[in-house]
Length: 454
Ligand code: ZN
Image (tube, rainbow, N blue to C red):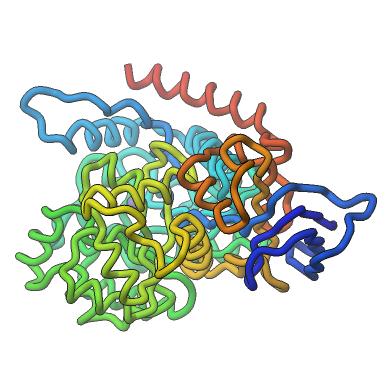
């Protein structure tokens, strides 16, 4: 397959009249300054597509249901209460239908791959399914149906809170002992043999709240290769609880007890001191920022300027999937910084464009976090490609180096024409190739689920 682009963001910078060869899902040649040939798929502006490094796909179905106040209840309560009501009823088939919708929306808004931080493992009440990997299999089915690139991240979730509190209520669907978890990871590694070659499996010890220090050390030792993802320091209460029980702030504790390095992805890391920020940046780990969800949940503002000044790596994730969009995540990331610092272009590099800098850095960081050969248009990488239309009003007057500023700050999914996931051409002319089927399955799943909730 050949893709011809009028312009493309290559590793070396912007290039014109670019012809890209894709073979076995990978980029197998890039020619610039050439003419298109018959049979080429022609697009306007070609970019490396981003990897969404953090998603809980089932939460997509809760979007819009908890945006109200209840007198006398704390803010987080309505959200968590609804999640637990969902967990009492969600069936494997509904979980698959919701994941398919979320993955399709990721592709329609510019993501070619996803790290699914998967903690829903068992039936309601904590009963194991006949196949203990039933729900991981459903996530893989959704990835196959949509064609998105998947790094599956089964979650180790053993305790209800810091200090090894027992699981209760909806949490029972998440729980594993360390041995049962290792069996699940092994089974997932077997299952991906039937998946496209870009599919991978990592591990996700949920947080310092849901794992014990001993289990965390053991699970990292048992799985010495591949991505390790973990939530950390998302809310102030978590920082206080971890400090009280473990004697150090979450990021501080983790850096003291683990050799955190490039295979680690720390999700949120919202509440860090300057010292923690600097030390984390030096490790080469990726921070997984989820700016839209962090804003929706009122988590706080990441210490972004100090982290980037110290050379820190980041990518973006859609987490709760309240609103799935590449441009929204990057825009919210910069706007939170502007509101906090009361300045413009806070996360731009010296003399650099903010949108382009954030986009290309998030592409590299997402690739690292998912251990996926992507993040740049370069020979040998998976062909994770995003095409946008620069003749649209939001972009038509912009120079090459302003195009990504236009996409991030003035654009949205309507600019997106095509998305390829490891060479699979899943979005064409702004539509997903399986859009009608995925939408009707989702509507049927939600009708069934809401009938149980009422
Ligand atoms: Zn999360």
